[in-house]
Structures are given as structure tokens and as C-alpha cells.
Image (tube, rainbow, N blue to C red; front, side, top):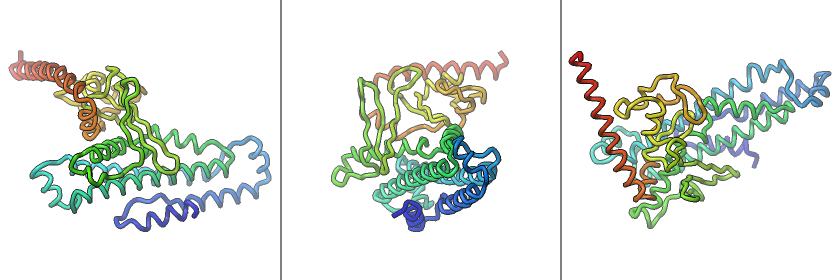
Length: 324
């Protein structure tokens, strides 16, 4: 079965209405573009230089803007649904029942697992669709603009496989798999999803269908140790929360949202990446269970630092209030 048909059947089978990539429409645009090129006298010249024509209407105003808009909707939907799922999983007591009562996710524990599976499938099949349509674009135009567009959307943070919520779902899967409560029927959101340590350096990896592999380094590039209380900046880089606060010149009391827009990521040097940072709670649980001795040591060290910063903050607030 061709992927286009497989993708359409998958999206039609979804009970909930989800944003869909217009794969068939994009292919029709490319088909028309190929027809137009074949009718041009200079088609052979375009083929020889292996580049897209300078004023291709598909490049300039149809294909890429349409694809960009659809990718934004797909990634936004995935992030929101993953956030709500993990919010429910991490909630406890009355708050969990309140969330369930509001109807954010109806059902039992099995519904959580099924929702996670559905989200992973949705993310991966859309990632494959995007990869295939961009490959098709380059084949039709004898260009590399499809690959350039892929790099562009990565810099815009709308690449679905770069989403911090996918990292959280990976940790969510391992946490459920390792839970004693679910030891009889281990859930399977991913195949081959593992937390590994090579020379003491942790990484999260999984292999998804259609040869997609994700590897996430879990070493903080600031303190050069396993990320503690991890946070993902909007650029996708993961740091310890306190390290991120230090890099953005804010205190832990103020938080990352207080960082100035000019503050940059220590790795990629992109500005304005702190305001939308995501706390990776599931990853935090996973790492605390996987290396308890290190976690306890870091916890004791940071407790002292946090208390000191909190004390200095409130002293400065009191002085400001009294006009001293």
C-alpha cells in the first residue's frame, strides 16, 4: 500500500478530529508543478544545474507556506494533547479526580496508556509524511530546497520529533513499564525505548517504525553532569533547572519566565528560548529512580543553594519595601 493511501486511512480512522497534513493535496501541487516544468523549453537546463527555478510559484507562494501552516497545526495539537495526558498522569488525589470530572481524559489507567500510544503513532506518522513529501519535492524540482526547508522548520521549533513532549512520553513509557503496579501487563508505547548509560553519561533513545530513531543526550552542557530537575528550552536543548536559571541570569525564585528576551541558549546561542521552557517531570522521575544515589547527593547540594537564593531574594524584597 502506498504511503499516501495508508496515511489517509489512518487519519480517517481517528475518532477525534485531529489536524491532518494535506498529503494528497501537496502531491497534486507537485504533480502540477512537474507538468509545468516538462512543458518549459528550459527544462533540460534546470535538470542540468540541479536546482529549483528562481521564480517557481510552487516554491514562492504555494507549497512551503501551505506545508508550514499544516505542520504548525499538527505539532500544536500533539503538544497540547501530550501536555494534558501527562498532567493527568502526574496529578494526585482530588486534583486527578477534578481533571477527570472536567472530561480532559475519561476512562481508567488503561485509557492513559492507549492515549499515549495514539499520540506516539500520530507524531511518527506525521513525521514520516513530512519527510516523504519533502523528498518528493526535491525529486520533482531537482533541488535541495526540501532539505533546506526541513532545517528551517527545525530552527522554528515546529519539527514534531524535536518536541519536548515526545521526550516526556518516552520517559512516561519507561516509568509505566518499570512500575510494579503494571508489571503483569507492561505497556508498549514504543519499541526499544531505553534509558542507557555509556561511561556514566545518560541518554534516552528509541527506535520507531520506518527507520526513525531518536537519541536524546541527558548530560547538562553547563555542569557536565546528568541533568537534575531537567528543563527543555524552546530550542530543544535540555539543562538542569538551576543551571538554566544561572545561564539566563535569573534566580530560582523568579523562574525562567523572568529571563530577559535577549538571554541566549548556552549551546545554540538562540535568544528568547527561556519563556516557553518545559519542565520535564516524567524525565525527572525516571532519572531519580535510575540513579538514586546521585539524585540524593544533588538534592542535598541544591537544597542549600535554593535556600540561600530564597533568603537573598526575600531580604532584597524587604529592603526595597522599606526603601533601604
